[in-house]
Image (tube, rainbow, N blue to C red; front, side):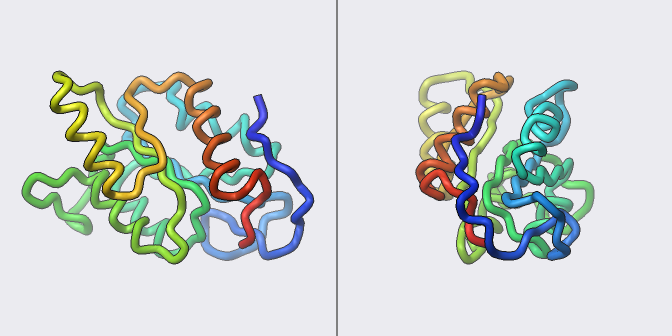
Length: 173
């Protein structure tokens, strides 16, 4: 399955996960903030699949790492697991706020704000599910997926993000 990208737009700087240093062939930065609750997850499977298409997957295992990546790199699309843990007090867990929600707020403050895909744990009740969906959409999420996320569902969601936000072309860096 391809992401539906067209390579006509080949101008502009290219970015790596370590800042703004160019990497040949990398045209889109995809932030994957995932706490690693499961082996062989979408966060493990996406990089080898997407790298040949020029997608640079920037992996973050903690909210702190995600905030550092957001501060130093251009993020074109972000996939944020709401249960991403913090490894220190850089992003403090506030009353009633998950750390993943804090990462969404940091992304929302970027200019331009990247499209965000939220991954969350299955909800116990329909009411909880609706409330969580509403909160994620309020934070600017493009899509909300429940764990475990099948790889095909994630690829289809990323394809829709690229079609809608980038008109099927590589984003201008």
